[in-house]
Image (cartoon, rainbow, N blue to C red; front, side, top):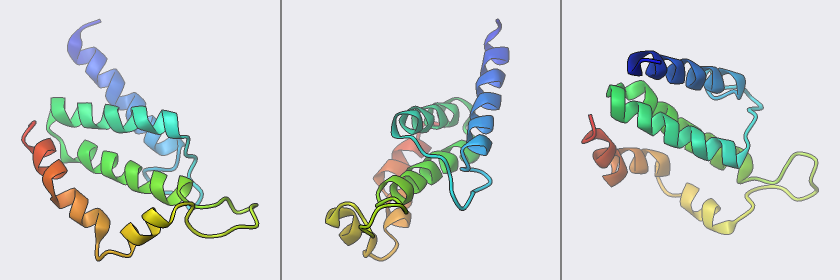
Length: 114
């Protein structure tokens, strides 16, 4: 399989992953599974590194954000509510915490790949 063909296949698979799990377009109840999502973030960052398309970098950040908001809270069928860890709760009380990460050193490092 030629490199361009395999890259195209990976792009298609990752966009299908985004659709099927409720990442893009975002669903009210996305399907999140930590191990799969870790590979998803790595794959989106790899695609960004190869293609230089902001779409993939944005999807990586959206996936991290969605994992925090989905897996970082107690489930709906649990008697407990709110964030599992008080640390995350304090982080999210900061003004624009995700925007700070997206425009900070990590974003700069990712942008230097293209």
